[in-house]
Length: 74
Image (tube, rainbow, N blue to C red; front, side):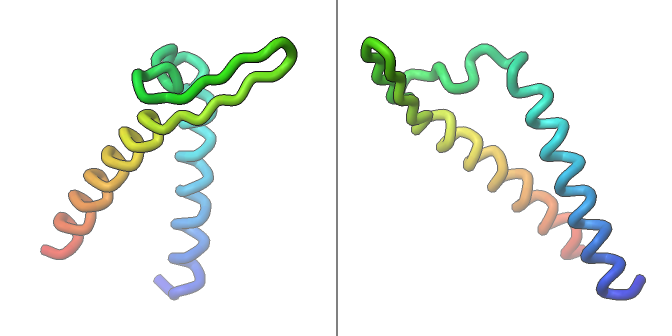
């Protein structure tokens, strides 16, 4: 495959995965509600900083990318 076609393939696959994640994110009730997530509620203002959720997703994504790199290195 030519380099530009490989780039477009990866780009399209990334957006496909992103679409799946966004469509499933509303069905996962604990996402954004973990202990360690910062939620500040006032009268007409809500601030949400999902610190623990971001750390968990980062750990999972790092593990997946590490496994893929190990499998592709063979």
